[in-house]
Image (tube, rainbow, N blue to C red; front, side, top):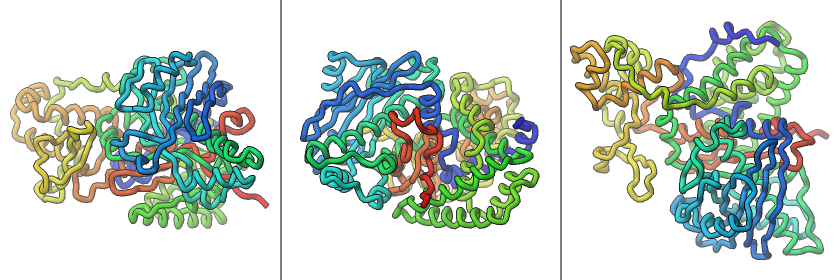
Length: 563
């Protein structure tokens, strides 16, 4: 079906609607998420995953290597398993030991590489890796579920599906570092490789292979415990396990610090939705696919657990919205013209923001041929957007500011609640932190992570400035240089700027975390506070040995149970 690009452009959502934190914090994974991009490539290019090393003893200590062999290059996840004392197990970044540590090696490691990495990878930040390594990560067990699964398999039984669904993973990572951290290869070293053209493919491959290792390890431990009676896990049950992840405040400023990249992500997602809405008709197969995926999304939402009050309310909205959507579909004529646009207009009135953003993802599911090519444009050279246009007139800069930051110009920045928070960098951990302005003397250390307030300050200075050009203004007011740059980027790249107050008393940093993690492909967001969240990755995904036999892209939502 030919895409009506003119119609799609006309119905795309305005940045002022999309780029609010309450909406960004309601995003769901979709066809353009980085995990799904990875598995599509592994399948289409016929990558093969081998396990040349698996040397783990009865205490759960040892080394494993998983090698992904592609058409031109190979990459190896090297895992070091540890017998960790319970009192040492922590998700905090300050932990010094973990149940397992990992690195993704560029190629196939020799014994000398394994020996070198064994001395460094288990130390994580305290060790050092080289440009032969692409990522560094670690993970801890979900102990109660781990013990249950080992005991069940060792005794010849399958684990309880309800316990699996309550947690969703046997191990959770607390960091997956790449792009030059701790000596790893910089992004520039691998950016020209086709398999890494899409963003975060190194990290996604590392997590995908980690999941395979974790499931092999739990079966291995069951066999070592009781070789006479142990059984492997049933394949369908095995796929219900993902990899968990704990992500904290350190990730939150990422979207603010990378405006051009944020635009690339949103400007793929929004056209994808608009293209589907612009379709004049839907085929019987597309309609059937959509109806089925809605029912699977209902199962997905039912299995989503959280005790955080904000997320509990959002889950109630989501479940109610999906029930309403299912009821609407029972009477909808999806063979009528423009069925998806009709559905979308209904949803804007009938569903919460949470439900609307779930629907945006669901609408893409039947349309690989309409949506997937947009994944090719989700990375960019940020440097080329960094230069300030000094020849721009100050009048033009004022117009831009009113257009993009109008909400900020209407904000009373003298109100204490408008500037309640302060972003700063911890001297001890060199990571972003968030403090309260009135309680702590943090202003001398404040990071420029409130574009709205800074734009309002810049606009006030522009109103008093007599010069004609941006160059003259920046020379006279260098304190506004950073927001001049942001404004100029955002006028060229309309989805580059978050249009909410990022230092307000009611700020929820988890909204920024969720927005980014949804593009990873994360599911089952479970905030543990307003500043950190647990997620699940690759749950229901096929394992490496299954990729050739199954659809590598139809796994995020659980399968329907048939009688």
